Image 1: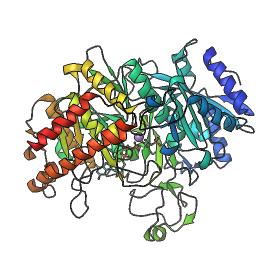
Image 2: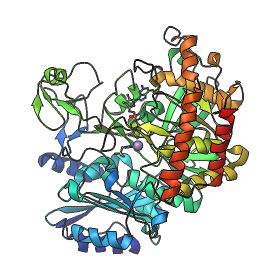
Image 3: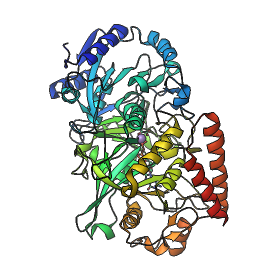
Image 4: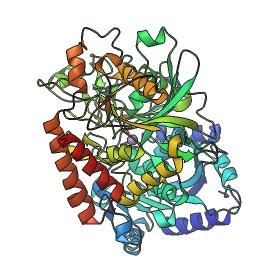
Length: 601
Ligand code: GTP
Ligand code: SPV
Ligand code: MN
């Protein structure tokens, strides 16, 4: 099939990859409805995908991956910069020549008997000065159909690239034999290139997402003076109609999708407050002409965690999945081909298929302690389905950011919310994000680990240089810089219960954050930052649960725990980062020293 572009850089590279992988057919994805419909039908005819109930879930498809291929694989993810120190201590590294030499034989002839799909796509609205073009080559229809939802895919992306530019990210993906022993997710930041092999799951294969929009883009952003971050973007509309935009970085499966789409409690909606979603996972941020920081969401859909999503916890996410959505590794109700997952409701279907494909009696299976849906099962839903999608979603200039929030899962130590004294202190706070691990990546769940800026798995270069880039951005933004906050929805009491109701009630914390940005509420100056006065967090409607004593506990700064925290941060900076080649900016050591001095005062 003929190429869709005259761009010789694209065509030469595609030809080279065809010669390497030797597909039987090559299909250029133009993005037309007819082409996509034919691909859906083909995937259904081969059993790769199943058709869901078309009355209740029109346009929806179901897919199941192999049990060994259900999450990102951080131990098999590489940053192959020419110098090892440029990958830094948070990444696996291999010399690019060596890695190309190792992988080239694995790709040689890997698409024999298969079709190669050539996917042009734009990350960011077509025509946005912040958008960037990628081309992904893949032998998976599942990847094509997901990329259609997650990106602006098709011939229009080439229009944006133009006929001569070389500025596109080259992604080569083959599911190969889906062999976990030979699974590699490899980035060559200096070549704008990503090679992914032997996986067919989400973040490993939708190369526009974590691989491009975070790992490659973070490196581009450092060189070009902007930022790529693992952040949601939301707008809070106040009763007077003004909208304040906020970004928030939480580690994987720690609440970005939920916060991005929250429905405020009645005491806010009755006053006219609304929350609008701009993005739920990734933000690209750049200083605008007025000096402020602007954000776009480079994605066009949501690859959201299914378990726990229900009409109460996240009505808008659930509504987003009712049409043209792909469900991956959830359970099925065999009677009517509808999806089910833990936390959707309390009634697992009796006649169910669990995520690995086994037919089970849902209630009995669940009662025996089994999960019907994989904990990292996901929906791929078009952003346009979201009832609270922002009117600025496609704004090529992005939205101006007033506040940046960091957060993670911390049972103790971290209060519900506190504010940094300034940008550099906020950068320190971001570097100190730790969180209990989740099912979004393979490995143990619930282990506390450092995840700076929620970007540990996604910084495409030396973490120390990444922190230095944050400091530089702060210098550029000056007094126009967003205010920086830290939140913790996951604080637990001595019985192990979450102390804060979370979800929609997180609006109460956003309200305080916005008032701090506007300078309309006071705070208590503590050693760790500005903490709310207990009476300044609105608890109308939840007074029974969040008594004044409870609120004090939620906001408490426990000196002993913070002394431990500082000792751990010193160990982390010295042993895990500096001793392993992380070039930590002096400013951050100074922040740590000052924090310690304030605590000991
Ligand atoms: P990725 O897509 O993996 O980057 O994750 P995400 O940050 O978008 O995660 P998501 O919003 O899907 O969060 C998933 C998990 O967080 C689910 O287990 C939710 O139940 C839980 N969660 C989200 N918000 C809250 C909250 O406010 N309180 C509590 N206790 N749990 C929450
Ligand atoms: C995450 O793990 O942070 C995700 C899902 O958003 S994946 O696309 O698989 O990386
Ligand atoms: Mn994510």
